[in-house]
Image (cartoon, rainbow, N blue to C red; front, side, top):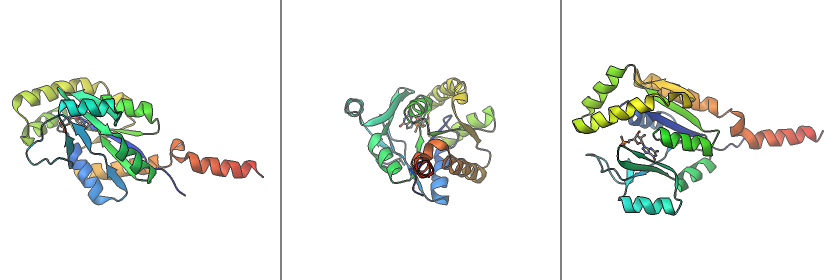
Length: 206
Ligand code: 5GP
């Protein structure tokens, strides 16, 4: 039974551990493709162009928008982030489950365009745990951390737009739960239209 891949959107507050969860999911389970976003944010230490992100100037980003090369894009803390269209569409057609790690404005645009997408929101075990992780990561200045915590306050009101929450209490448990939720989504009616149509036509032909 051939099926198209599931489009999975993963959001969560800055510092909640989304990147670590994604890396572990891909390492542990097969069949996933991780979309690489375009951004105008400067690379962090250790980040490489084409690996974590495609890093662009604002002008280049504007051109990508005008050429309709992005499935969605959003502004987050003064920088632009967007999902390149080609890779997402190719991987879905190949039956891969494609994961977009994006913020809430983008998540809502994806849900509007692809109603069968699965929207997951990663939560910290507590508010204090989030602040601690963001500080411990040491990749952002105090000012940027405050801006990201401010942003988290707004994002906290959007959680009800998602299908499921994932609590990042223990990395392995969280990764396993994510994999299970995605497996369930394979059986969602909207993700099996071709198969349903085929069997329906056969039955109607009796
Ligand atoms: P960071 O700067 O920490 O890498 O990412 C900041 C935020 O931008 C995170 O919430 C991340 O999920 C989001 N983000 C990354 N790529 C995209 C994208 O392509 N589109 C949207 N809408 N958000 C993104």
